[in-house]
Length: 256
Image (cartoon, rainbow, N blue to C red; front, side):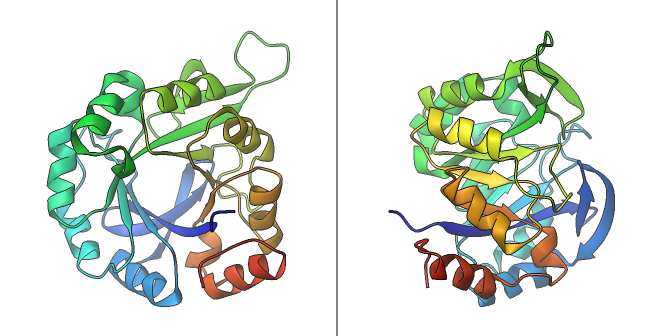
């Protein structure tokens, strides 16, 4: 079994790390540079930095924010938000970013996934999928893809889109449940498992972590290859070493 990765997420707005519930009601959490340094020191396996308003504001990623964080990061570092082309990605790679994450741009232009994979390397591309649950027996997919920070529905099924993303040669999928985001009530295990069982590339579970058991469930029930969390780490409720120790004691392979 491959080692499960523990990944803190920095949702950045106006140069500060923020956290909300269901993608709204954002509150200030901490400085992104200080957070990045602390997570590297604590033993995080990777770090995700998302410029969460870039797409909504129809702009590119704020490179000055990324540059400051990149100087402090000593672990693999992924950036998302406002990335629309391979040239945007190359600028980020030049700053020291290891991976890029695309979401809305991938839905609007699926060819960008294949183009990126061919030109820059599959291992450097993460496709983020935000999903929500709809009522059973409705006209919409049970698990539906949403874009633009969750503000716009697509009518596409999450599992169908995940399969397409893999066919187009994305390196991995960052799957976030809008419904679970920030609730601390646990990951959406139905959605996570459905996607993880439908594809062979790694799936990162995101949205809803509130206690150590949730991390374990995401791996054992949701079949995730990695767990991403924000609130529990930002506000000191759970530490990276504590999360790794908990999983290791329960038979989950993690990096020491």
